[in-house]
Length: 319
Image (cartoon, rainbow, N blue to C red; front, side):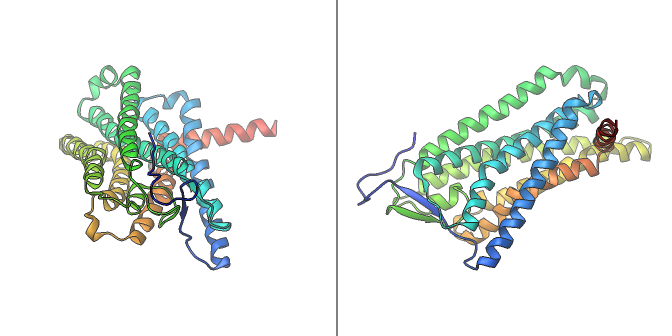
């Protein structure tokens, strides 16, 4: 539930505005075109992965099911943020209502948390595939895969709802507040509160540990067992193939958890609003863009399926 304190001399509906990146018109146009291009590349790349996995029977395995789910999350994740961001870059500062800000924060935290949980699930999938290959199909059933995805979404929803509701019970001073960010993220909104926020910061830190630290530790444990199993493989080709199935996932994990930890787990005294905004650009644009590139460039199955899909499409159009 979202609430605001009416007793703070507010003459109209409470609202927020986002601080502009730059006041120079030419730079605004350049930033708009750059972010629009990145957004379109994210949509195209992740949509291509979802379509290929859904249409190619050879890719209907747990690993690619999780990959297509991750790509779907990235599409939704960026779409919660980027369209509003683009509209604010070119035009004047457009206000967002308190409820609208709360809704964006809720979906952003939910999708981002699900993303982190899903990366841990994908690490478990690789652990079973490499450490227990003979039992892989018995363990990683389609039902279990769906249950793990649903569990990740459910846990993210619960944490996000509690955190968002707690933050928007705070009073915010003034009627029109400027957020030094391009989205209603938790830390910059907390800075605008006119009340003691120590409890809220502690809750944010606990949620950050549950969403970032715990899954990351589970991923590390999984990779300890995976590395041990890979080193026991006698042939160099076998070790190379086993490592190649994990390297793409590990690259995405380090990028995602590293950037998010810098924003949500650093002590508030050592952070600046401008730094948070710059880091947020990385996990809003770079990570969702690199996901399809990393997984396709380093995965022969996905590259082959994409190539076959393009050839089939070209052949059908020529006929």
